[in-house]
Length: 421
Image 1: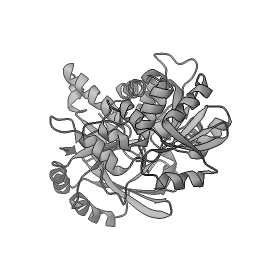
Image 2 (image 1 turned 90 degrees about the vertical axis):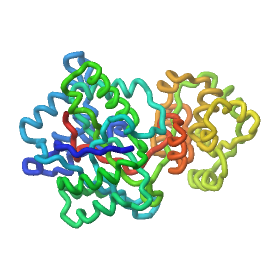
Image 3 (image 1 turned 120 degrees about the vertical axis):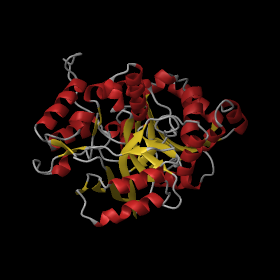
């Protein structure tokens, strides 16, 4: 069940900002250090200063990236860089993009999703303590949702879109291209009758988290803490800002997230053990790897080590059955899940803490190759992307995949609207 609520969004003030297109940023967890520097230089009011501020050697409990974000948000609001919408609203948001030569449009809307018994989202990924601690520190300081949780809902009749799409005939409040050539458009709806209609249509919908698992859990925990402490703010933070889009395989895109592994002891022995479970087929180039993966019926993961590219495929199903016996049945259809269980946990003997320390993630396959060639990591693994139906199936079974099992593209850009408590 999804109970949506309108809110008075805090938005960048176009009247006082030149080049407003330069103030937006991707979600914090896909921003590299180089991208952070670029966004800092792009505009003095870029939202990256709030969601992923720089850290310094002399940071302390009184002066750090979280306290600076709090000060900047307050200062920018005081100076009129940010202004509140006068009426509670929901916001239509579309993204036009090209993937594999195909033009697609993501259609959705931003609103609050109320924390109430029976209301909530089905997750599909495990979360980690360190990112949650980081986002909680920021949330406590800024007391705001700086970026929306990305969710999808099941609406076979497109009933919600049918209500909202007529409003797109009006000129959007924002219309711009980002660095990835994605075109973003943004409209405000404050008509209470329309909002009520959308609310009623959304109420019975099953809701799934696509992206933002850590932020969703953190916000829910924060709300519960405020309720336990009987803080007045509990009535202002009883919902989380969320982007809602309909489950549609023709519009939603899931890309693979590649794994980079470093600091492996006795690498030769580990690779030898790998051959007990997998056929290791030499591959000439990335195009050949992609073709082989697309044709494979089961597990098919690329591996790059010491200048050599290979394809891993399951060799021994009996060994597989033994290793996966305590895992959800759905995991056997997921490259990322079997990679996590068999390769990282069993062969490389990594526990959860070690995985957090030794595995990094990227969607840029060329960056992954370069990282191995530069010896920044030892191996790179290239899984097939998780399918949309697999995401839905896992969530509906109340199971979870390993972290970074999905990369929904494009992601909602940050800075369009803020939900300030």
